[in-house]
Length: 161
Picture 1 (cartoon, helix red, strand yellow):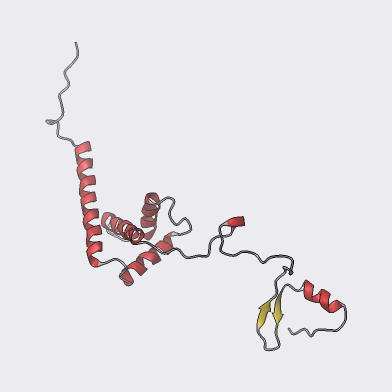
Picture 2 (cartoon, one colour):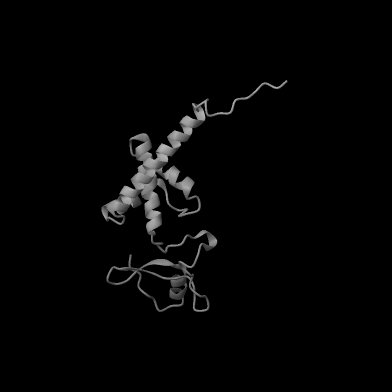
């Protein structure tokens, strides 16, 4: 919709009422701001003020990427299937205050990016798998020692008189 400027006093009033959606003669839409010369424009991307979230991207460190792969690999080794929601739960348990705005699907996307772009080397991935294998053996050993236990190693209790 094209509105032509009129030379009467109401044209200024009409311009003030319209806050956005102005169409130029070439068909492009432009936005008008509601702040005047005495008001300063709003600050974008400074912080999480008034419920606004930061738009600035924070780069993933090598340790964070290894942690993501560790969680996905651990779930895959434990359940013999890749369940990204379980991997997210594990990752969130291990990193409760890290990247609060990320969800399970975004974490899966990050894992896929790490593997596709080879952000972690094959040697580091093998180290992660070895670390998981050792942890699983330790957990199994602790479980069997705690549940079954070798009664010969335990001190005998003597009845009290």
